[in-house]
Length: 470
Image 1 (tube, rainbow, N blue to C red):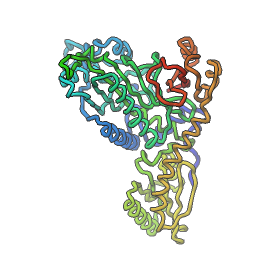
Image 2 (cartoon, rainbow, N blue to C red):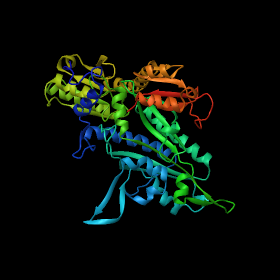
Image 3 (cartoon, rainbow, N blue to C red):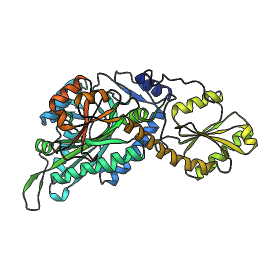
Image 4 (tube, one colour):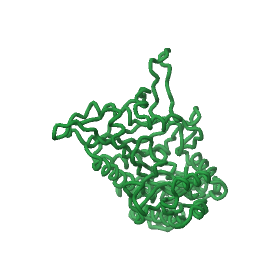
C-alpha cells in the first residue's frame, strides 16, 4: 500500500499542488536566471513523446521541418508595426557581442514570423512554389515577469509552423487543417484532453494576425489553459517582407501567410488536466513508461518473474520500467510511482507469486485486480487502451459538468469563478470584455452554437466561452 501523500491537496492550494508535483515527480527545476527552466529527464521524456506525436501529424499535413536563427535583427520586427508592439514588453535584446557594441541590436527570437518571412520572400518566385509549408522545433524567449514552470517561462521549447499561400481561402483552410488534424487530434488522442475550439476575439488575437484559432482546455481548478493556436496573418507579413509570387497570368501578387504553434506549456496542461492529490496521472500514449513492474522485495523468484513479465510486455510492444526493489521500502516506491503518474503498476510479491498471480493497479482509478502470470501481458496491453479512452471521457465529463450556459454577464462572472461560462457574444461586447477583465476573466474563444469554429467574430449567434485562465 502507498504511503501518505507527499503533496499539498488540490483543494487546499492548487498552485502549491502544481509546484509540488513538478518537483516531486522530478519534472523540472528553476534555472539560474529568473524565469528560466531546467527540464529534468522525466519531464523531457514526456516532452519527447509530445514532440514526436505532434511532429508526425505536422508532416502528415504536408509541412517540412527547417531551422532558422535564434538572433533576429531588431529592424525585422519593426517592419510589422502591430507585431513589434505586441511583443515589445517581452523582448530580450542583445546590444553587445564579442566585446563590442553591435551596429544594430539583435532580438532573441520571441517567435519567427519576421525572419522566416524574410526567407520566404527569397525562396518564393512563382505560384508553382506555393504553398510553402514550413515548421521548426526551437526555443524562444519572451521575458516573463510572473514565471511558473512549464506554464510561463522566459525561455521555452515549442514548434512553430509558418506557411505561405496564393489565396486567403487556401491559407484559412490550412490553418483550420492544422487546428483540427494536428492540434485537436493530438490533444484528444494523446493527451486525452478535450478542448473548446474557436477563434479569439479581436482583443485576444496574436499580434499581427487577422484571425486566431485556439484550443482551450479546462484544468482541475476550473481555469482555462490555451493549449495551442493557429493564426491567419492575411497579407500583413507578406506586405512587410515583400513575400510575392508571379501568378499563372504573370501578375505579381502578395502571398497570404499563417503561423501556428504549441509549446512545453502542454506539459503543464497535462499535469493540471489529469493530476490528483497523489500526483501526475498520465495517459498511456504520453507516459515515458506506460507500465512499471514493481518487485515487492528483492527475492530471486520475484525478480525472475519480473523478468518474465518484462519479456512478455516487450513482445507485446508495451514500454515498461522495472523497479527491482533496491530503492527503498515497497510503500515508498509505490508512492513515488504514483507521483510520477505511471498508468499501470504490476506488483510482484512472493505471496501472490506462490499461486502464480500478480497484482495489477490502474493509476487513474486506483482499481486493483489479481491476474495470472501467464495472462498479465495480454491484460495490461488491453488495459492501457481502456485507460487512454477512460481518461479522455473523465476529463470531458469534468469539463462539461463545470461549463454553464448563462444569459447575462453577471451570471457569467459567477459561473466562471470555478469553471467556464457560455454566453451569447452579442451580450458581451467591448464593454463586457472590460468588465470581465476587471474580474480577471477573459473571453477564451468564440464558437458557433453547434461548437464549430466560425470564420470571423462578426458571424451572427456566436457563443463566447468565458473563464479565468493561466
